[in-house]
Image (cartoon, rainbow, N blue to C red; front, side, top):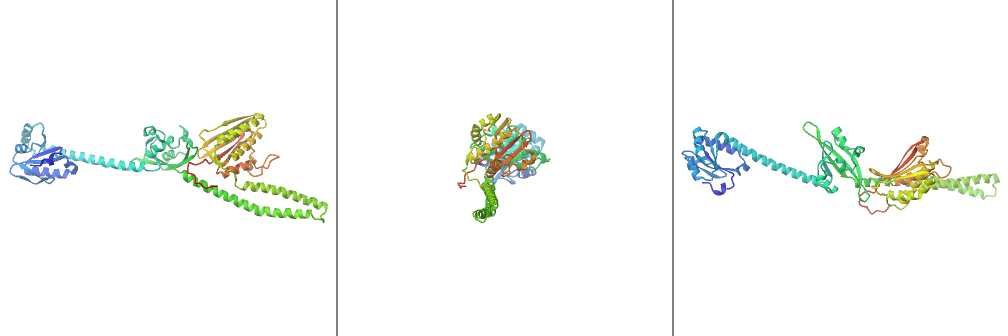
Length: 493
């Protein structure tokens, strides 16, 4: 008899009925179709057939299976049996078993036995596959969640279908709040409909069926700018159609900071070389000319006409020296103290001073400030000087009155300060010279106003943009690099 420990965990406890050929056929099928997982569910505990005491080769997990001369004896000795498999296929025996077996014992005929075992085997295979799939999914999710990059899984319309843990941590939002959102809302924080103004890599991926990338930025709570590189990769189905896209956002703020420092160092080196060249090549000969002219002026052998000519040489030398000094000061790096500057505060303070001149000239001043402006690294007095020069230029362009617009805004990567007037505009033939040193259309002044603005903004790593139409007006925009959201290095300079 089979020990109780062998059958206590079995779901199906089976007794088999048949002659030796039928039982051997069944046993071979049973061993071929089952596996370790299936054997945990079922077990053959006895067989009924005339003559033999033990079925040759019949054992189940090391347990010898006893045989009996008839099925009634088998059931009497094995009350634990809950399923009988009839392996002979004889109709008379099947009919007899149906009438004899109690309801608690299931009868499985020969034709159904193979189906029954295959069904159990398929179920176990499905469970094993499911467990393997869950393991793979958990491993993949763990890897993706531990990545520093933010990852979004998008549908073909660019809406969020899933994300990794990094997205949840950086946004501070639950998964339900992000599901179904346009991915631009998560990665660019652009208002609804403004994604079209961005070089959207998702749109490019859907159009070209190829990976794409683009740069975006956002201003944090401290007024600092973070730069991100967004990558989109298509996921195609078996037919090659793009039905999903993986979007990855990587923080490149540190890299952008290093690039800005390198560019600034190169500019300062160029300025230093120019200053050294001018001091050596121009000021030294000029000093000699002035010295010899002064010496001749003190000489008694020089007549009056010659003295007049020498006086002209000295005057022109002094004037040239003043021009050279101004140019030298212009080419040297600005040595003003720099700090974190709030452009909105600078505009407010400057307009408090300039509103009266605007009013006296019948110019309407309109100020628009962006509350989400990033701070810039600059000298507030120099920025104020730039703004005053631009406002004065605007007032001079509107002698009969007009409108003046002063605006601050974020233009993706840069902080923007714009001054726009409705004046006479700048003629096209002099527009290329407008930022050149010592160029001026006025009778007074050294012509360094706009050139100085261009220099100050350039030293800060920014740029100046000018748009003008004659008879319509002029708009000058200062683009300044914002303070990046990185740790300060502590280096001076």
